[in-house]
Image 1 (spheres, one colour):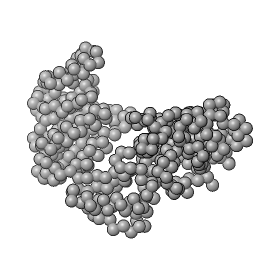
Image 2: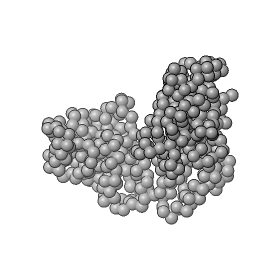
Image 3: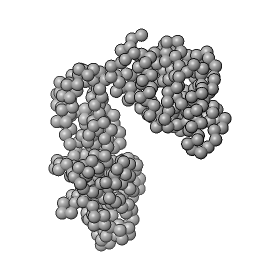
Image 4: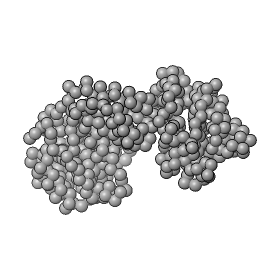
Length: 428
């Protein structure tokens, strides 16, 4: 067996994945965890809850792989078939596993329920298998060697799978022997697209070392740039590449790892002992939601006002009815007054306000769908910008909420340079 490049296959199961009712995020999660250890998935297969097809596929995979990860099918219902299929492929019986039963009973007891036959089905496992602990859910993971192949069975619930990944990797290391972890540096950016980022790199003529793999993962609202090296001896080259990207992208880089705009804003507020309030119209509270998803956000986030109607803009934030009448809700004058009202009502140090036309209707020739005004700042220093972001409604809200947070981030950092998306998205 070539321990430096083991053949790892992934088998995803479930009619809900095949039908599209459930979106597969687990394979990406597994691949990311493996990639950080210098491992890659050679192939993944997705099948519905068909016993014959699952048995044939697992038989084939186990015959030609070093490791097979099965994801899904560990639950209490009749369509959860993984234990039964693995037992058949391994040529062993299903048997009640005492530790698995104790786990199910403990899980039920903590919830004040009596385990029934469906719950206890999760303790019927292939004879001779070993458990892979599941600290969250009722179904334990388990593993069994079939021929020379290690088969590891994991739950389909993403949170449970994520918590089990260290034990999954540990089981693989026991079977394969020690593998050398790679090193993945993830940079989070906002306001850059993949094509723009790649063109900037190309135009800069960077002598990119072959030992550093450059990757992009586009998303909304952020784009992730990955710098991957397979050996710790290449960390210096990775660091030089990072420095080159920082010189190109500068203040569009938010942070490392999984840092979000909301996290970075809250970190900066905490460092400076400041507080923030939000006043939202077109984003419907999304900015506040992004902030409050971060644990400990109450230290820096004081208040969020969702002032969707003009009446509420006036009565809650004190926006002048005359301003609304003459300028319209989507205007520089209105977001200025929204920020002032939010600062006044919350006694916060900073505030941000947005008002726009999310669509798909409501646009005019002067203010087409996608038009938005942002205002942000503190008492005596409030700034504004009008943008046009003509995309689907949900994406519009996501990107505008992110842009609002980005403006606060930039102000807290004392950055005067304008982001690239201002030039791209400014109102014509």
